[in-house]
Length: 341
Image 1 (cartoon, rainbow, N blue to C red):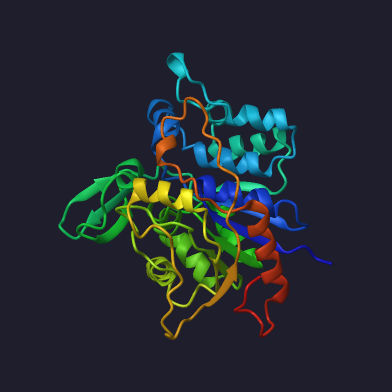
Image 2: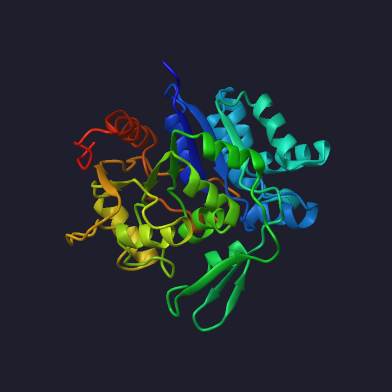
């Protein structure tokens, strides 16, 4: 039986979680990664060495690696002292490979070989992608890091674009067109998800692809970005860039996090943090698939992680999420779709 070709689109911890589960199934995986990141260790290496942002690529490589546990821990090892404080070994490793081979694409290919990766990891672009966002009051924010820490909801978002021309990586476009299924998210909406589709050619490829599109909605909202958003709000924002009706299915969590986690999150992010499925009976162009996909394991925070406080600690469970996706793909085409899986 022919293996299903699955393309994932996103970045950061969300892609790591998703890929860690999907790699256990007999599918052909292509992880397409946002290149907008300019914060933390990634931002320093990007500015000082002129390399493409390695952080999100590193997480996807580690997720798909079939190397030893020690090798995967090494790739994620973060220095906590000296001039390398805050940097992860993997980010430096990928930057060195890009410099050695003179190309980010070739550097990533070599990293995939060294790490014995199951599938492939591809940048969404090989261009210098400096993100810009304009608020409705006319203020323009420059860079993913600035956007990540700004209050976007006070005045609202008018538009996002890149500072200079950014084209899509040819191989990434090919994978989108060849895919049987495309999975978007989960991840930081304005900083990991939308930056992929601000690239016109990439958004156009998604619209032209015959693949079924599955969107994994976030578990929690981000203060100042998406607070009080429902599932429908996320879909509406995403489809502004990829076209209305292009999302076929949305995986919606039905499991409540532990009370202490909710309280901890609300102290950090305020009320309205859990993403709720809109209860109104409105006409939707997508089907909602309900599943219990929350992780019960608290994420480890590495010493030296300078942006640890910005990372979410209510997260998807890799295995539960992958199981829900694979069950959905098996059921696809049947009438019993909008149910708990």
